[in-house]
Image (cartoon, rainbow, N blue to C red; front, side, top):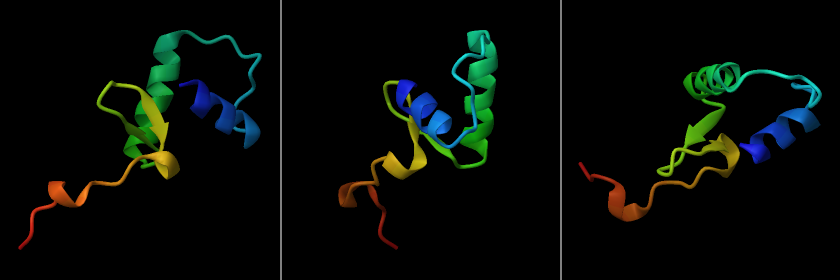
Length: 63
């Protein structure tokens, strides 16, 4: 989560002085997830889409 906050602050999308409850932050992450801006890792952490690992070749199903 700190990586995402840092990136969003760099882009000017958030103000680090804002005081928001965690539920509001989670709501923002859920919206970002639905729009494809972030992904969820197996450990339930958030990661920017650009840094999300791709599927490994062994995970793909061939037609």
